[in-house]
Length: 590
Ligand SMILES: [Zn+2]
Image 1: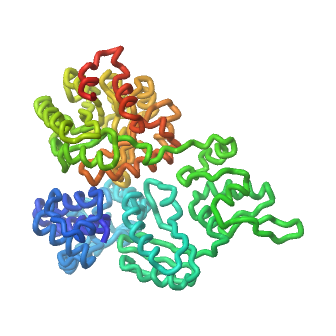
Image 2: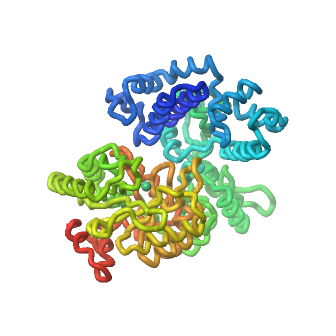
Image 3: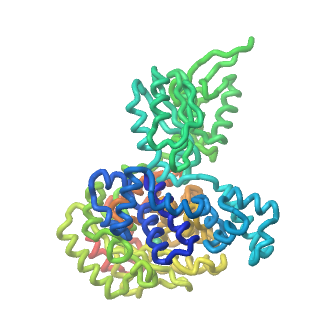
């Protein structure tokens, strides 16, 4: 069982307990545990298999540790089974709808027998909600709108979650006999921030054996189709996975076709037709004047592009957003990749809400081959995260000094994720800002300001001469929270004017800036930085998701600050030195 499913199960337990009216602390314990699991950089299953003590994880005590182990080992949770004897498990879906809390879910269940989103939809259409006390026209409208959203969102999976589901499946399938090629196509291969269904493509001389193994995947709860060359399974998480087994001569064409996007494919097909070619998932065919067609390629993906006179285009760019024109003109970007990354400039530690120490984070970065990292714990305003006031910040600096002596090969920068206060001032006195090597600023409060007020607030913060990086600039959480209202162009223009780098935050639920906005930033001349915002050693691995979005944004290494070698980074960090003294920064960074 993967982390995503474990977290969902724990959330479901919390929902059901809450609907039952259980003790709030008990409910919160399950929610916290769900959050711990879903923000963990590695599979719980791996920890259980390695015999690691789960109680070292935040919010995981004796009981939860046992539950996690049970889930990993059996795929079930006795506790949830027992709760479901009292209330239908699908009842927990209802609380995902805005305007329905646990009490209302209980009421809807007891009075109208509503126990799922589908039942809620029916009751809404039949006008039944209006018969309940407390459900006025306004509140019903709110429920209807939110239900529309929840349904439209459907089941999309954050890229990192999809990764955790698809990778073990690929590994499992590679052990089938005679698998010559195997790849996941679709939005997964294009590294979109969320993924719907997953399409796998394979070549094998023994398709039946591969298909048999596929349909017997232990994490599959349902086999929806199983032909000789095509099958569909549904994983426990609800993820649908298609497998197509192809003849070698068509593999490349199919890979191109199923990778998409649709808009990109339409354009490529059109270019083909202009040249008298038919391009489909079966191959590239020359149309004959007399009718019929002759295969001229399709074994390799490059065949498709070559047929229309183009070089191979990286999957992340295939959105028909100018990549075909750029390929034709020979101006495709040399996309940044993980190997270009030299360090991480947003990392939290136990000094605020991180799980691991400065030293542990530094050692982990050294192991990753990084040249530097910035320790950027929260400032005091973020009290829930244990933000640092100047006195504690100075204590942290003493610790950093010690770690610098012990951990060699990786440069540890003194940084802070400083809160942008409501009026755009920063949550740390100037004398301390000046003594930091890296100043990251971010909004964590007052998200509901008007668009103008929010824009002014952020722009004002960027005008502070100490600021280097604007973190998670829109504040969105994928599938959970919309960006706050802000004139992002005005923010990006201010960042460009001040040479403040803007972040692509690699946390799987943030990916903020998004691909589209990061590309916009680049067009406006803004420097970007890809940070993990890691709150534990494991989360340093999230860099891959930030890099993926950077690639989708057409970024090259030169656009990204943390591809700089340490000397060049230091020069950039000291870029305003002549305009304004930052002596401590230079000293501390050396
Ligand atoms: Zn933050």
